[in-house]
Length: 288
Ligand SMILES: NC(=O)c1ccc[n+]([C@@H]2O[C@H](COP(=O)([O-])OP(=O)(O)OC[C@H]3O[C@@H](n4cnc5c(N)ncnc54)[C@H](O)[C@@H]3O)[C@@H](O)[C@H]2O)c1
Image (cartoon, rainbow, N blue to C red; front, side, top):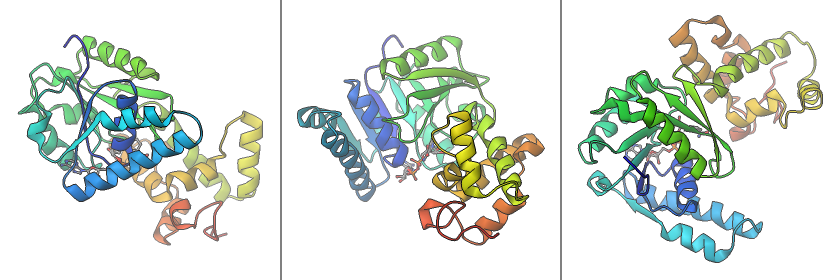
């Protein structure tokens, strides 16, 4: 594979829409696969509203917005992905769903088309077994919202070819983002370091080290972080963090990843963070 021009994105949800936008903004045509027309409409609406917001803030002109939209072609049939140089999988975070779709895709694209997964918590090495020529598969872990977040983790599965990893890093640079090459391990780099930190904070809050507000203020002002850890947990979603850190614990048996008791209780009580207005810093989610 010499040059990445035609790109396919699998899934037109939160991440698929953001990734399709980033790729289209780099001037490339993007084909986006969804399960049905309702999901296509939702994906297009998501993409359009993000671009409209950018146009209103003066980040891009209305003409540029229309050019970007015109480069995105939604489809519902995997057979339409035949001419892709690169396929970016961003469907529902379930190994069975991803493996089945990756298998279908390899039956359609050429043998040297690159295939990447945007999974957050599944093993890229396991997913690589779902495709023929697994050396052409790696992870490209975009952060949410993809159009705004500047870093992309290039995740090297055990099978990933070194030249494939290099090509993907160059592709990420061509999107105007910074690639960081990282081994395939639970949480890759950023979330691997983030999960134990958040778990520690929850335990310290539970031990009444300080109030939630003071913990966030101290970390923001003391370390120069944009968000305090408890605000960040509310933003991520307590259920999402619990699932991620439980998966990392199951994969490693490393106690740093074990979900703290207070986190489990809050999720069990339906206190999920900003998404339902109940969390550490929002609503009356705190049980203390
Ligand atoms: N949301 C985040 O903050 C975030 C950040 C980084 C990575 N990720 C990862 O990105 C992936 C997608 O997450 P999301 O938040 O966009 O999920 P989402 O639920 O918003 O979107 C997933 C989309 O995939 C579609 N889909 C499911 N099966 C499909 C199939 N067989 N063919 C085509 N489309 C199919 C669904 O209809 C849905 O629209 C997951 O692996 C997730 O772990 C998410």
